[in-house]
Length: 415
Image (cartoon, rainbow, N blue to C red; front, side, top):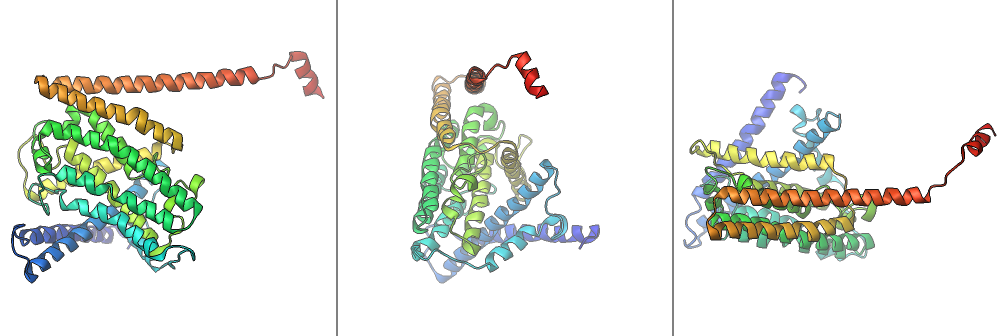
């Protein structure tokens, strides 16, 4: 297992398995038929096959982020990360999954059993259902809905219910506190996430993902609306509970949030849902702001388009993990302040800037200038506020300091 040829062979086998899974998913989609077709055992079997392939694919993509994060954080923190289990440590997430599934699954004696065991499913299902309308390429999508962006926003909110029920059904004070924190955080940051997506919808003139991607064939929207991307990306970090917004399950404050009483396979479902949601946010960022599977040098084939889309998605995932390794966790008051006093106003500024540019038919570069000006003003205000706060704290400490005369200082030193 440690020899380089064997490692490369196993890595190629795993890459071939992923490619085969994508091919199976594409075949199942080709066999689905039209939405208006009569429901027969054959069509039901085809739908079950497509959903099974999609579930396996989404799970594999989420597990791949576990390995990528551990390797990246290891490199950034002067460690090596997983190396022993499989080539380059690729099988380490599989080993962790086997360990979690085989662990003893316990629950509090006074918990509500039915809700306690259903809550992890309620958290994971929305992160899977949104993939019904997220395309991997122009033709590789379960259903290319006209209101695809609206469907994503409407379904993704349902995960909040699972977090609240997980905390409430545990019959634990810390779990309930974590559930309330999660509800406050996710509801607050859903607003700027919607505003960032709304800016893109106004630019493209459509809520269909394929139309949004096609509109970026020449210039991606991250260049036209950097403010909308910044609002969407930061709000997306908070929506999936990534550092520095992992406040509702902060171990140092609420022990483990709404998941504190979970163990074994049920805790593993929460863990998997977090990484699947992380991949969803990265995929949405690639579709809405990075052009998805398009590039300015012409059309690509099916395989190349999927590879380009996944490459952009993993690039954003790397940035998300980079943020985790760089910034410390926010306090709960700081978290709410960032959402309500910073991101929501900036989200409205982004929407208004796009509306003004579209209404008056100004050149697109004017939208970029307005976005950069708003971002620069927000950064300047934040830096000024941080500096004034630090200066005020330093003055307060200086006033409390006790001056010691040199003669007395020498006497104390000699004594």
